[in-house]
Image (tube, rainbow, N blue to C red; front, side, top):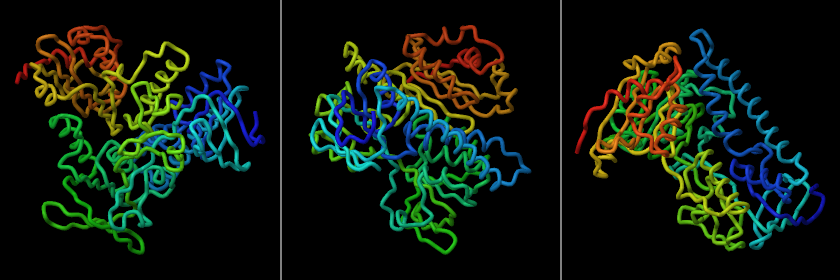
Amino acid sequence: MGTTDRSLQTDVLVIGFGKGGKTVAATMGRLGKRVVLIERSERMYGGTCPNVGCVPTKALVHHSRKRRPEDVPQEWYERSVGEVQALTKLFRGGNYDGLNDMDTVTVITGTAAFTDPHTVSVQSGDGRLTVTAETILINTGSEPIILDIPGLRSSQYTVTSTDLIDTTILPGRLAIIGGGYLGLEFASIYGQFGSQVTVLEAAPKVFGLVDDDVAAVAESILADEGIEIVVGANITEVRDGETSATVVYEKDGRQHTLEADAILAATGRAPATGGLTLEAAGVRTTQRGAVEVDEHLRTSQPHIFALGDVNGGPQFTYISLDDSRIVLDQLTGEGKRSTADRVAIPHTVFITPPLATVGITEAQARAAGHRVKIASQPVAEIIAMPRSYIVEDTRGVMKFMIDAETDEILGAALLSVDAQELINTVALAMRHGIRAAELRDAVYTHPTSTEAFNDVLATIVRADT
């Protein structure tokens, strides 16, 4: 199928090349349905993750940790960015070819806007094209938020995460506005590359999704790597100079200034719906600008679905993948799967070592009325985890929250080597009702990180309310 026609009739139209949308497109195409996928940028085939999100950022984590003391920071960074860009180009091409090479699927590069509930107008390099479809998927993702701070948006030194990983110039002094997952990951990455990093966070603490004892260990790891974290910082102004910017902020009633060669705006991402003219399709949005969906991801128009970041759910690639399962169950299955089925969903912030969590914290467990048992141990003291010594990183801590009456695992926070992998085992155990004692007494291969559970879960102490 080509784009020379001025109009197309298709079975399924997907707007946006994200994880959820491309998965549905490929599946429906294999089932013989006619599919059109529209992506506005040739640099975004495959979506956020392989192009400007998970893949390049985690690749930079890897490259930053390989830098030796004798390596010149700028040279090592420039080389690393080049290798990461080559990787993302490979992934991008694979994503495009994987769909466009299917006889039943057409990929169009252009900007889509609804003209009615079943029709979109696409402006592409070949001119304007009209696409009409029985089923439509909105999968346009999210975009960085830059706060309305005087001088921030207009500053020539302000960058988004996308901008920063695309430049080959390593900032000598990097100011990061926002101490959430994104801000702390970038702090860890660029600190290791050799930047002087300062994180400015308005809230009274960072790592707010874990208990204070775990957060303290994570903060100390970053501090030991030279990263400065300023909490309770209210940024009032950004002023450009000839060679750098000045960030003005207030803390504890006093004014402070910070000089920076680059300012990373890391204050979250908003659903990308601009230009879609959703009102023409009768598709409602929430107060926060996300496409409004039900538990089956149907919008206010039953034949239109919204997947991934654009629907206002958790902004993770694996959630977008699960969105595709829900939609496919609606289109080809029994229609029973829904967002309500999601339990024990893990999360990871990719500092080094990673901090991975699932379930609830100790504070939340107490507040919910559980009689709580705690199993917690510093990684350096876990005898059954020689892998941490083998890879020369014994930093961190592991903590489990367990119901004292049922032995049910209520939650876990793992700050350790391989935590991003370990947490999936814990989440699977929680979803299937495997008790803490079973996880403790299981047989694991050696030497691995998973066998740490043998030791940690043997340290249970009562922490009743």
